[in-house]
Length: 461
Image (cartoon, rainbow, N blue to C red; front, side):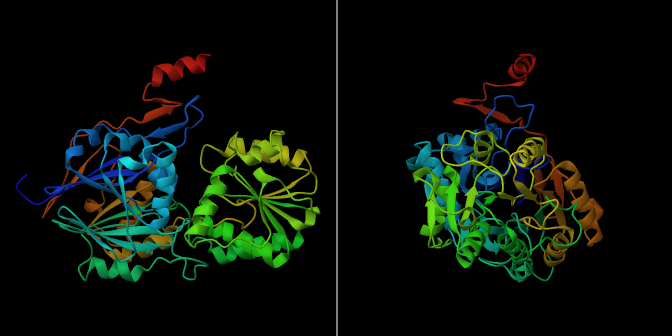
């Protein structure tokens, strides 16, 4: 191709929540942006995780200049252990916290030495071929998330990353729209790719200050133990619980391997401060009155082997749910998990606990922007072309309509699907022929050997 170009091939994340993975190609080489997994739904009997189809990557691995990670959630880094063996020697770029999570993951798979982990900071300018990546801090439900501003041969491109706009964040960076606006320049960016997860939610997302106030009221009213379950990567929310426990004189007991690992990493990197009275249930539970205990456990999505599920069903060696407990489920119900979660909630009520969850109490704030915040991003970047990403198909369509209401030409709002490459040229765009992107199913040590025929047999069984 003689003209300058940027070709973006989405391998996942467009049409589903999860699997976020894109290939960016120019004449100077290729860069992968994110490499996430998706958790299986009820139809994936026996499947552990779902990862992108990496055929398109294997075919061009000699041209791959590196992998750029926006943040450390599983739907953005979780597929790396299955990709790294294909790409020995590649460089992975991300924030310190993101790379700490990646390092732990690759060490568990005994492949850490196969890649080079390269930390970047807010404000870093990273040249990879004829692409230059700039990293803008954004507010999200995990420390050190980034949006991307990318200088390309065909103009400036902005990738929002996963973000929300919290004007007064409790910890870490807020989303500074000024940086996005300045990068886009007076004419606006050539292309914006923006997070679509919460486009169906009107107004603005709750702030973490509002969530902490709600949790404080729970601490003040609870007469027995407080049991809090949340995403183990939500370090800011965990810190809020630690601070409330210290202020109210309660001892914190945690349970869950991922929770313990993430807290340790966050403490070592300066993102978490442990309360003075802190225990890991794996090493024993202190003998204290119920009104002096806070239990922080994994299992916010009803996972059968999580600490909360085992506490409810009697499989936990040190802890159980009992009468008088106040259980706070401080997370969003991921679509597909509602049945398992409500089964768990009903069982906890049967055991005599009181259960608080997002749809009836302000105990969780999403890390993803609602429609008004998405509008602010669009108005800050003022893109010529707009591609909604990170969402189910209805989210992508609604986000496209929002872009049109913000002044983007309807003919330049491009609803992409996985496997459909988009090429931006100096004066036009083009949709390319599809590439194979059928998801790869991971079942134990088997990768890709479970397909529709095997799943059909399992359903019959």
